[in-house]
Length: 183
Image (cartoon, rainbow, N blue to C red; front, side):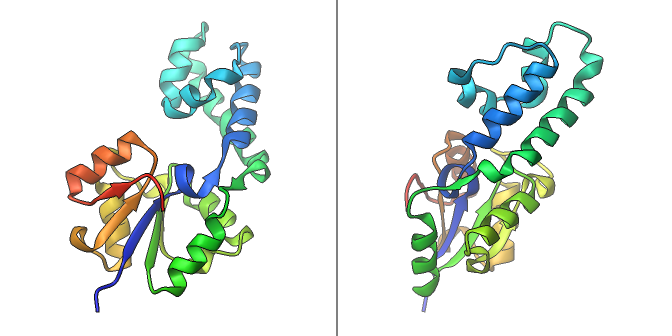
């Protein structure tokens, strides 16, 4: 019997973190007199913090560490604004009941993914959760994908990834894992 191994991208498939990010960016930007434009939220999210800081902060870049601390504190304080994507909890439970082995890859620290999954009653559905704190090499390198597959007991031939991210499509291409943008 072959098993279905499915890895979900936490941010694009499982959790809507836009409220957390909006609060974190607006708070950190305000503290550093950087204009915040809500219409650019997706740009802010997809751009590394150091690149954002260098682009928008007009003072000494030596303040970058303080910016990161402010951003992380604001993100942590607003994590309660995270919401499950519509229907995801039921779909995850159904896949698990059908025998699928599920994993998650996240750009968040792993603890946030665990908190979210637990709060939504689906943490036990996942055999692997790999957060950015265990990402020795950033995506699109397939390191996190391979880590997750290893913990799941999967290989590229038996695994598929579900993600809405172009970077994840590139990562999956490098690893020989098919990817789709919906369950």
